Amino acid sequence: MFILKIFYLVIFVFKGLKEKLNKAISKLTEKIYSKGEGDPQVSEREFKKEYYNKEPKYDKDVKDIESTKDIVDNIDTVDNKDKLKESIGEKKYEVDKSSESQEESKEKIGFLDRFKITKTIKRALGKDVVLSEEDIENVLEELELELLEADVAYDVVEKIITSLRNQLVGRKIGPKENPEEITINALKNAIKEILSQRSINIYKIIEEKKKLNEPTVIVFVGINGTGKTTSIAKLAYLLKEKGYSVVLAAGDTFRAGAIDQLEEHAKNIGVKVIKHQMGGDSAAVIYDAINHAKARGINVVLADTAGRQATNINLMDEIRKVIRVTKPDLIIFVGDALAGNDAIFQAEEFNKAIGIDGVILTKVDADAKGGAALSIAYAIGKPILFLGVGQRYKDLEEFNVDWMVNKLFGDEEGSVYSTEREF
Ligand SMILES: Nc1nc2c(ncn2[C@@H]2O[C@H](COP(=O)(O)OP(=O)(O)O)[C@@H](O)[C@H]2O)c(=O)[nH]1
Ligand SMILES: [Mg+2]
Image 1 (cartoon, rainbow, N blue to C red):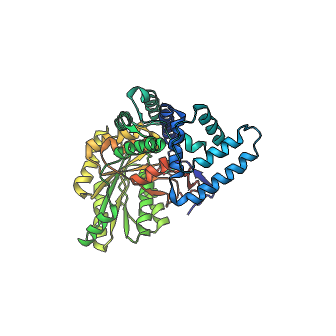
Image 2 (cartoon, rainbow, N blue to C red; image 1 turned 90 degrees about the vertical axis):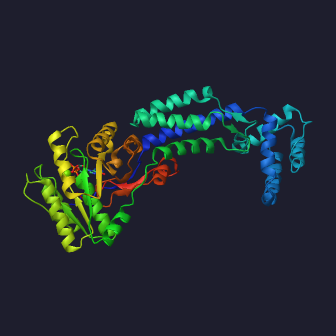
């Protein structure tokens, strides 16, 4: 096996998308804050209510206040030390003090500012905020353009924007709520709606077929070079790791070198390939592989096919024959994330022509934009099953919505994938 070791690298999957979504979150949040600033006195009052009412933390609060007093003693720039100390002490329990002048109140916010409590104060809105269409229109328009730039399909962008508008316009946001959390959740919901296709549990299918003493047959389709053969090898590796037996069918009888490439992978992973001559009938090879699996009790047949454009009538007829003859349990479309909107277009075409069950999106490790991962499942209403994230056999990531949402909104900057190549 040829292994070229280079170095490990933190890879920022969906980097472009993540940045753009975060930018929209900040802008929307900022909008809510600026609309809700209101009367600083009220803002401070709400903050104190929150801050001092937390009974279990009372001791800590008092300690905070004591140490704040000490700090006050050491500040030259504050003229009104005694007054400040006094008012902080009094405010332990007593929250509302309408006799205070606006000036005093501002001074105290300024004072607290210096001790980094600013964040909490800013977080407390001074009044209820109800966002209007006009308030967020600019931010949504900008987000719209940015998502298109990140290769998110047009329909998906529209759906996200509409969802955000529905969730945010007219919603009352009170001083106790966290505007940032509200905008993040709105965006998360929008993304979850986009990715709400019924998922497929491949292991459950295999288990059910096992009970019937039959192999699970999976046929891989797509255009040239998207990563069908590679993904078959990766899935074979994964299934073997999970304890299933696998046989590969060299159904790409069209391209010179295709059979050798599959055999090389098979040798590396330790699985068998059923092959015919180049130029032979693809359906016949896969049919043979299925019979081989049945005869030997092999759990899964992974069938390679030649790359083709969905517009190629002859080759689409060939794949229809494959499907008619082999009756696969799953037809998986393999799309290249780097192709962006083109991958989505291809998926739609294949789905229309032969009906696909799910998608493997490859080269996500090399895709800085991330739009295809968000759009492809929505475009065809079929789920993404796996993502190809590198050039090692284990670089196949099981896809699910929470994983994706976590990648887009989680704190984690990147993922430790690798530039190491195993093929
Ligand atoms: N970086 C990266 N490269 C990939 C991935 N999947 C496939 N490739 C590469 O894409 C190229 C084409 O893959 P191949 O499986 O031959 O495509 P096929 O024509 O669809 O069978 C090969 O050089 C693969 O190593 C992936 O997830 N990440
Ligand atoms: Mg191939």
